Length: 154
Image (cartoon, rainbow, N blue to C red; front, top):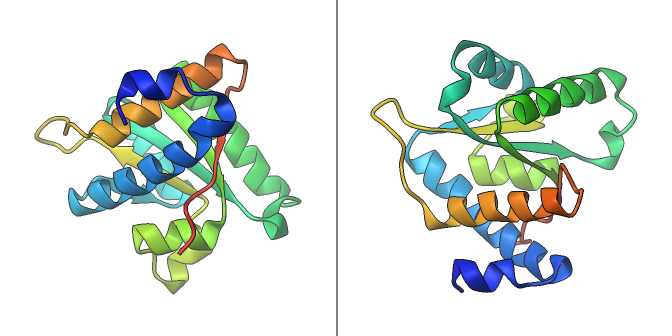
């Protein structure tokens, strides 16, 4: 599917495509050592080198929806992303996200935030990442500032 075809799709049709693209990007970023997993680790990267951050993923499950501290962290992360023109999405299914990024048991509980960063030697090109940026841009045009994507099940 070309980028032009994605842009003319309706929002309901774009979501499954975006979920597949997100999984592809996460796998590629993991292979390139360009992932940061965990709320606190992500906050450190954003504070030290915000220009290296390319994409932000926030994940929450029903059991954490009432976690006020986590919601405050999400609000601050979202604000930072908006201020620094970083594309951001929400996904449901923290366990699925953790499985994709390879988070271990102790990290699973903190896999609520994942950053995709550019490698130190420069940025890497990924068509799936470009699809995600276009998905986020189109969602913002529709006043959906933090679109939700469903990761494909296994």
